[in-house]
Each structure stands twice: as structure tokens, then as C-alpha cells.
Image (cartoon, rainbow over all chains, first blue to last red; front, side, top):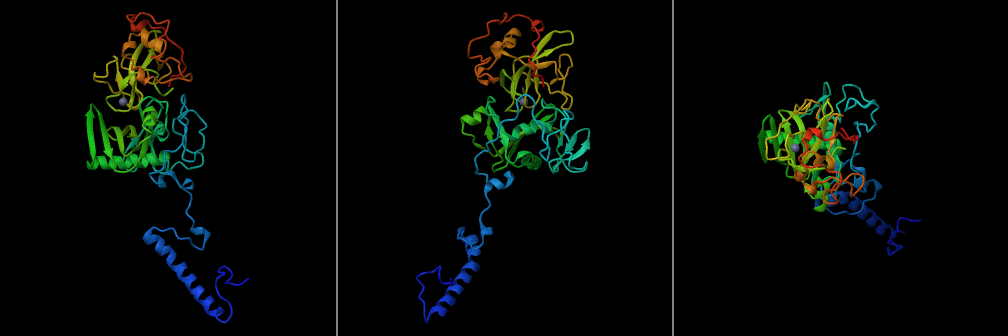
Length: 238
Length: 135
Ligand SMILES: [Zn+2]
């Protein structure tokens, strides 16, 4: 089999070597310019290597997926006893404390890769927020975990963060920084509490719950953040 | 169960929380209701969300009535009969009913409970119920 066979209309004979050379040059030129054309014009010209294929979105971390994707089809958290998760996804081995350190990590490893433990089950975020014991779930992180999955049977709206717990923590931190800067933020103070509503200007999750389901799960660009000083009471998208 | 079965309205403090009716059993065996937000722990001692709530200690939330843990084992979300027994049935918002495992179970828009005592029974006389959903 010759190099010309993929191109059956190419003439053979005296012009064979000239034609082959021209084709080789064309192929080389295409191979060089194809990525640049794709980048510049947004085309999807096929390449010569299988590694150039687009990675399926389902294999990318949720936080890197396009914001236009539909809400993830995640089952609601267990109703009676919310399951405890760890960064490694390993099931916890004991009922208390509410937030367990993953068995596979050392004591200094940040929880979810972000939170620094300060003792007594207190965890500090990079932006300075504090997650402590409390809430119906036993720990504010466990409560936040309710907002990384939909609960379609819940009356009213139920904000759901994109990106699982790491995505939620990053978004809450971004919202807190923006609130401190006073940008696109409303603030309500009530006793010791501060309730921020921060418009992050991009999708951070979607509205679930029965109301969200009725509204076909609209995207959420805002975050409601309830604090007592730097202590998180709750946070959710809306 | 993390979601209240019966609520008097959305929480005016945090927005998306539910002001759920929760029944507490005191050490002496008497019971009383509170309205508690399942999202931000705001507490009302009356089923009137226009009143100012109290905000318990965020790390050690306790009942303003007897100091028992707000989310302890001696409390649970009220069922419809308990809402009626404590005299708060009229304040229940039926559109915020959270169905249990059975779709029509305890729905205020369905048949009202047959064993509902008169609404003027003092809250402290409501018999305790074992629902096993304390959280
Ligand atoms: Zn609330």
C-alpha cells in the first residue's frame, strides 16, 4: 500500500512523485495550522492524533464543567441521618464527632483540601470563615452538605451548589470576600447575625426543592450567607 | 428527619429556611412546642414569624424554655395531631407540608386528624410522642 492510496483520484505515473510531494506538503501544512485555526476561529477541524479529542465532560471535575450544564442528577441526602463524607469519600467509622478526619490523610491535611482545623472541630477557610459544630446536622459543614444535593421533596426552594463540597466551600469563600468588599452585596443585621446576599454574576448552582422543581431548576447566581461574625450559620445559592 | 413536617412559614431571617413546629419534652415529662428554622436555628416561642426570633448559641443551641439542646433526642418535628394539640394548627401553612414516607401521610390538606384534642388544651399537656426523628 502506497501513501497515495487514501487519495484515489491522485494520478499515477510520471507525476506520481510530484503529486505525492505536494500532498505531503499539504498534509504537513494542515497538521501545523489545524490547532491554530481551531483556537482562532473556534472550529473543530479533525486532527491526526486521537489525543486531540475533547475529553468527555462527565470525566471532568464538576467545578470545571460548563455552567450551562443541567443540574446534576444527585439523589437527596438521606433523610433521617445525613451521611458523613470525607474528602476521600470514605465512610466514617464512628458516629461522633460529626466531621471525621479521613483515615488516609494525616492530621495536617486540609479538610476538602481547603479547611484548616483549629481544634474542637473548628475549621477555618482560606477567606477566614469558621465552620463549627452546630445546626440540626451536628456540624455546619454537615449542614452545608445538604446544599450540594437537591432535595426535591422539600417544601419551598432549596439552593444547591455546583461542585460538591469543595465547590461549595470555594463559592462561599468567594461570596464572603465579595461581601467584605461590599460589591453587589446586600446586608441585613439582626442581633449578632449578619445576612449577606451576594450576586456573584455567574452560575454557582441551581434552585432545587419543590419550588425549584416547579420552576425547572433555574440556575443560581447569588449566595445567601448567614454569619455570626466569621462563623458560618448557613449558606446556600439562590 | 431534617425537614419539618409542618411549618408556619418561611423563615424571615434567613429566607429559605422553614419555620417548623418542633415538640420538646421537658425532664418532667411535659411537652411544649417551638417554631425553629431548620436552616439557621432561629427560634420563636409563638407561631408568629413577625415576632423577633431568638438566635441560640451557634455551637450549643438550646431551647429558650428549659435549656435542653435545640436538636436533642428529646425533641422532634411535630406531626399534625401535635400541631393541633398545642393549639398551633391554625398557624400551619399547608403548602409547606413535608410528606413523610407515605405521600398522603399527615397532610393538612387531606383528612384532618380524628384524635385532635380541642385547640385550647395547654401546650404543656400535650402527650409526648415517640417519633424517633429527633436530630
Ligand atoms: Zn432561618
